[in-house]
Amino acid sequence: MSKYLKSITLAFAVFAITGPAFAEKFGLGRPALLAEVAAWDWDINALGEGLPSGSGDALVGEEIFAEKCAACHGDFAEGIDNWPKLAGGADTLDHEDPLKTVGSYWPHLTTAYDYIKRSMPYGNAGSLTDDEVYAIVAYILVLK
Ligand code: HEC
Image 1 (cartoon, rainbow, N blue to C red):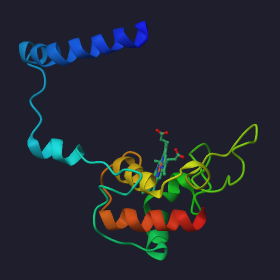
Image 2 (image 1 turned 135 degrees about the horizontal axis):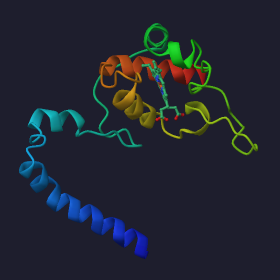
Image 3 (image 1 turned 180 degrees about the vertical axis):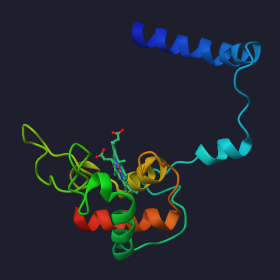
Image 4 (image 1 turned 90 degrees about the vertical axis):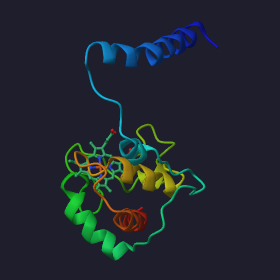
């Protein structure tokens, strides 16, 4: 392990031990509730482990996408202004200026599920139901 990594690891270890003590001393924050921890303590891996049960299709996904995503990503995921494009870019990864999208460089759709459920729509993360995420992922897959 490099010296730099050792220092970072040590800094995190010191913070992990002293952080809660400082917070208590200065009256900052409060312990997280079990329900709060549970709401964030999940993940979906490349094999699909962790996926919730549910379903959705691209037609429903198109409607949800238009309502909750298109303002930034465009109706066809082409990206509005500087907001990220989510579709297109196939076969551009070896270009000087590749177009990286879910279709072109995300190797596992399960990752898209995890990311969208965890962090989109931007500014309102965690608001999508499991079925809405399935439908949106199906729609993005069609656009590719
Ligand atoms: C207010 C604008 C906004 C809205 C609405 C929005 N997004 Fe995003 N989206 C972003 C921004 C900004 C990023 C880049 C975030 C980053 O890199 O940290 C992003 C990134 C993404 C990415 C990852 C792109 C990549 O290749 O890294 C996906 C997938 C995505 N959004 C899907 C969605 C979906 C699905 C919805 C609707 C449910 C949605 N977004 C709604 C702004 C938005």
